[in-house]
Length: 487
Image 1 (cartoon, rainbow, N blue to C red):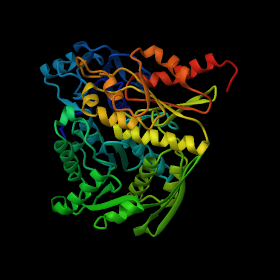
Image 2: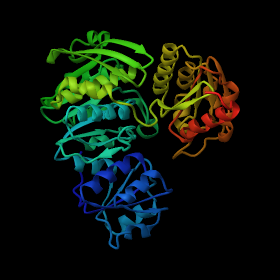
Image 3: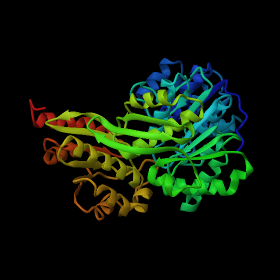
Image 4: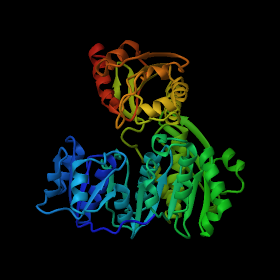
């Protein structure tokens, strides 16, 4: 895919407050470009961008293209999130101003850097964030763009002084085909975003095309514990990635590595031991003759695999293995990825962005491991489905995943860009939950529902990609008010 040739002197961003867009805006501002934008509401991200020099309007209108007193040289949008009849996009087209995607701008910003891109149906944000922490600990100052906010850094993007650029590669609309990475990591490939791709085969095919974007002499790194990613590795080997000299390297547990002897073993997880402080991990890197022991503080075996990918990716860019592992050991997470919000009345509350059945399985498995390691009580899940199409496509799989919780509160579907579908609500998921569940369509009633269920020693997980994240602190307040003086 050819990157559009545009002038970045004055960049106007529609939906600038979004996680991906705001990160690009930060980097543009740090590189000295003039940035304007618009969004439907104010936010902390917009406040920070204004402080950095961006001119931002609240609300969409053609007049926003004149925030600098002269027209922008390019307008940036997310084709998936912003409707094509947006007045700013229409005005830009009428004025002959190029309209491009966020991914196209990111590709332009990467052109003079060695890019480490993290892709996959699940785990992109966590793995990208771990890679940033690892490479920083190894003495690099990489530029980075992440779909979430690093807890320690408090930001989702940075313009670094080094020659490495680390980014999350989003497949949801195929836009990651704009990139040409030196190292591409694929954590997993499992059908999603079928509202865009239409078929599972089309979804898998876009990852094959992404693999072909790796630069000659670069590396395609795949998780062999995932069937879809392992299949991608074998296809890449069979096709020779169009006869381009690209290394195909696998990582994963010892059993997964042994099951795919045709794929070069880059990193092998030899041992995982769960403790209240995290998961103690031992990995070997055969081609480097290195064994590493470190702790992953974010719970779950999937996070161990993500950490392994981050270390391997960093080593392929020249990082020191032991320093990379030190960076993983100091990594304290990303907002909305098993994020701890607090404890009241003996009940711990966490929040997670999981919005696909596999992600929910991973996070609830991790919660159960945490309960077991700490000797705590039950797991209570508060789940808000995201998108009507996804809910209908995966109702049974959602129900099976949520069955890992001891009790489930199903909120109403968060439609986001989709209109309600008559007769469809989250109860179609409940029909497939094996254990206790209830349906609570009233957003503000959820904290009281949790208080009625939760007992000291329980872990409460608020789960979903929508407004459910706002409830974690409300649940803590409700617990405190119902148990004054208790901790």
